[in-house]
Amino acid sequence: MSNVEETLSIIKPDAVDRNLDNEIKEMFKNKGFSILKEKKIQIEKSEAEKFYKVHETKPFYNDLCAYLSSGPIVVMVLEKENAVLANRELMGATNPNDAEEGTIRKKYGISIDKNSVHGSDSVENAKIEIDFFFND
Ligand code: UDP
Ligand code: MG
Image (cartoon, rainbow, N blue to C red; front, side, top):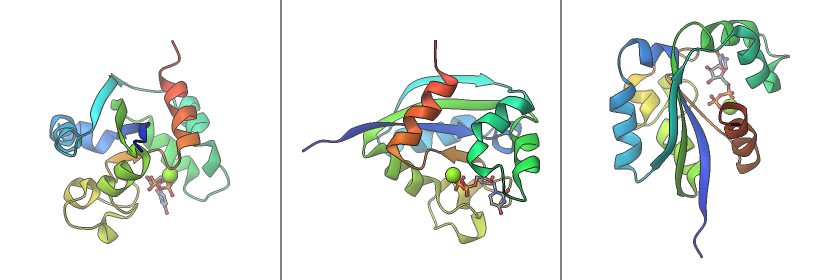
């Protein structure tokens, strides 16, 4: 049975700043993702704090929110069979040093904080995150 899902992807400021957004979008398309919606925006730190609220008790929370709001990002809705897991696989491990060959974070990530992309971690969170950025 088919299981087409939508997931939220963000190309983070370190990658947009290096003009990697088109190359990263090609990696998604080559893996069979359709980009249903996309926009390049810059968010306020308060919005980043809302988006990353699940991490609010973590020691890296403040830096993470400052970073995500530090420059333009590209926010996308990706669609594919089992898109949530497929995107997590294509992104690679949170720390680029641990990411597999062929993943976005291995190829482009600079460090655990500047790891080039965000991807929803569950179907439930994908719905919440898509609604967060594309609620109009
Ligand atoms: N992060 C960080 N330091 C850490 C762990 C995470 O700066 O020790 C950042 C990193 O940018 C990561 C984000 O916080 O992408 C969210 O963390 P999560 O564990 O949800 O990783 P992800 O789902 O992005 O792989
Ligand atoms: Mg996460």
